[in-house]
Image (tube, rainbow, N blue to C red; front, side, top):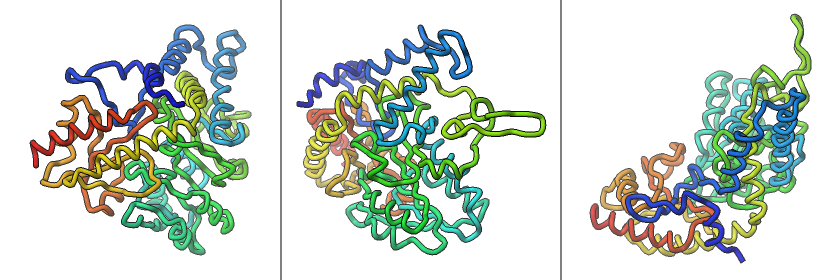
Length: 405
């Protein structure tokens, strides 16, 4: 049995009050709170085990290197990949830019196409716009249906003879829509198209496996995975790594440097220049240990309970417009309120009741335009949230409706 009350005890911040009432934290789609295990791992790394990694021969450097490199294996097992296919990054944004600069930029010619869904986060849009601006790439957009679902066949139908890349999210950070990326990636591989998957949300909420998905690249970010900010990883298939040029130059990514010549280390070190986020990655390793201990299937089952309860309660508010009604969506709900209340005003009012939600375009402006709105409120649920907190959100929204309705 998944004991959410016991899980909540692992997160110190959940015991605090905001505006005189118990905190209800529903901004997990932006960044999740940290369990004691992560906080302790970061503290220990700074207080007792800190040194720079890799080339030191003294005890602390060897210990830091061992702890740091162990995280690569933890991430690999967590997402079903090979250890040598895990490139450490500062998060999904860096990972997706690494693909754009390191793999795509040397290959994109004017008129080459990049297929995207309209649901993408800006981190999976702007790096491809760079290629449009600088190399003449063409961005082809695939829209969602009325429920917010993305038909994988519609993505595949967008492939043409000039398509070089397909870049799609595994789970929308606005709608909660889960995309059948395996079908898309299989079709892309058959056509020699590189597949890039933004796993920032999906890897948090359900088990993911690179062998089953079959993608070339998959980006995850640590701060959503209950780990520190500025931590994360990019899965890069071995064959694709061999085709990539280094993203940045400096220490650790070289094999030899002379006045006339430079040679590079093998991947993944080839893409990890400079002193890395040592403690951040160690903290991410602790977060992955924590998630593995709970079990991703158990987490997913708990969040389905939250999703279903939230769908029922929020769907019963006839003055609320929910964006995205995919049947199998994750526990992410974006909405607007009829009567003219701006999402920022809604967020401010519910905050007075201790409920933290996010308001704005959620770094997804093409999706906002597709939905016909400029902004929404978003309540995004996590492994420590409860059905009672859903009810607290509804109570706060009812107050907001009284004020603005």
